[in-house]
Amino acid sequence: MMQVRFSRWMVAALASLPLAALAADPVRWQLNMGRGVTASAQNAYEAHMLAMWICIGIGAVVFLAMGYAMYRFRHSKGAVPDTSFTHSTRLEILWTVIPVVLLVIMAVPATAKLVAMYDTRESEMTVKVTGLQWMWKYEYLGEGVEIVSRLDRESDRLRQTRGVTRAELEAHPAYLLEVDNELVLPTNTKVRFVITADDVIHSWWVPALGWKQDAIPGIINEAWTDIREPGVYRGQCAELCGKDHGFMPIVVRAVPREEFDAWLASKKAAGQAPAEPSQVPEGGDGNAPRSVDPDMVEDVRQGEGPAAPQAPEQAADPADAAGAA
Image (cartoon, rainbow, N blue to C red; front, top):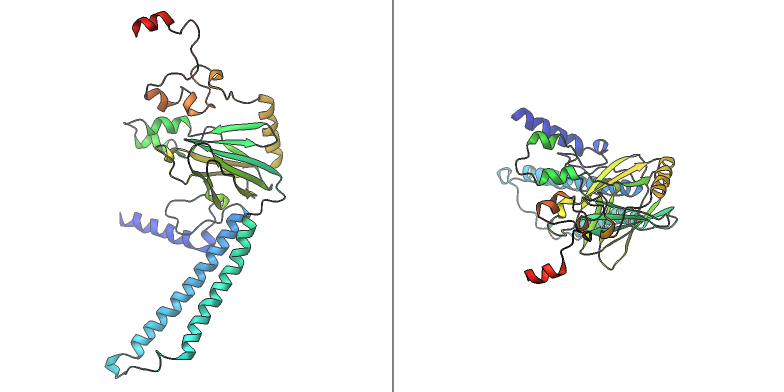
C-alpha cells in the first residue's frame, strides 16, 4: 500500500513540473495544468506558470526572512525589539512598490492574452454549438451539415445497470466520456464557435482547447480555436444543467485538413439525419434527440414508447377510446 501511494505521489510530483505538463487532457494525480493543443491553451499555461513562479519566489523570500529573523533575533540571544523597523517610511514604500511592480508584470501579458483569446476575426470556418438537455448539437454553418452528439449507448447502458462489474467498466476505458457522434475539426485552421442553448444554461468545455464558454438560451457567445496536433480531445458540460448533467460529454476529433474535407464531403453526400419525430425509424436511428429516439436505454427503462406517430392500423379506434372513457 505504501509503495502504491509513493508511486502516485511521484506521478503527481512529475506532473507538477513545467516540462511534465504536456498532457492535452487531464490525467489522474495531475497537479499542474497541461499545455493543451491550441494557442489559447498555451497562453493560459504561460500565464499560469509566470504567476506560479512569482508566487514561489515571494513565498521563498518571505519564509526565509521569517526564519532568519526568528533565528538571528531570538530572545535567548538578548535581542530587543527594534521600534524603528515597524515605522520605517522606506520599508513602507518598498513593500508597496514591489507588489505593484509584480502585478504589472503579470497583468500586461495576461491582458494581451485575454484580448487574443476573444479575437474571432479571420476565422476560416464557423461551428454553431447548441446545448440541450442532455446532448450537444453541432452545425457547420454554411456547409449544410449538422450532427447531434450525446453519451454513447454503451456508457448509457452501463451507468443504468445495477450489477455492473469493474471488469465491464475497465473494458470501456472512455466510460461516460464517449459520444455517439464526435465533433470533427481540421487542424491548423482557425475555427470560430458560436455557442448557445435551447433550454437551460450549459457550458461547453474541452480542457485541451484552453477555454470554456457558457451556452445560454437567447444569447450567442463566441470563442475560437486553432488545434495544432491531430488527436481526440474530451470534455464535459461544466454548468449544472439538470439530472443528466454528468452524462453529456464532449469529444473533439482533430484531423488534418485534407481528411476533414473528405469527411465533410461524405456527410454532405450522405445527407442529414431526420430531425422530425415522425421521420425517426422505429427503434430509433441513434441520431435523433433522446426525447424522440425510443432506442435509448433510459427511455426504454422509463417505459416511454416511440415518439413517432402510430401507423393507422396500430392506432386505437376513436369509438373504442370513447367507450373506454
